[in-house]
Length: 141
Image 1 (cartoon, rainbow, N blue to C red):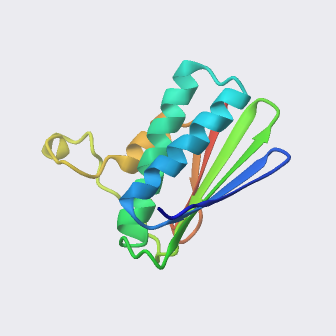
Image 2: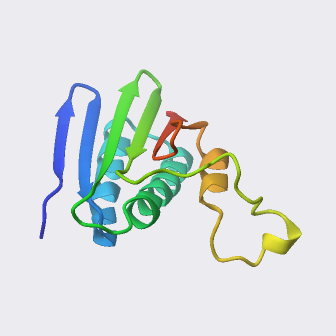
């Protein structure tokens, strides 16, 4: 099994994942490790796990198109009572400002298209870079 590179430098953790669905287990292990270390509440842990799974799966599937030669970069910085997670892929990005509303009546039965909506509602703050291939998620801990 391929190993991801994990480094801890003070309160900054980085994870580099190959663009395959199985990499999600390494992400989940990092989330659990960091949440345990900083005694994150169950609610915040659940929100982080949901958001980060969604963001990394989007990076693997949509950003890097499951190209195992491309990497998904995950960073988490702990600053006092806040965790800031950054997820970036090597894809071209997307226009996060012009997405259909997943709560619109004609979209309720769609199986996809809720990711950005979930991130914006479960994270305390959600911001994309200009090209849309990097997202920053803030959680109060």
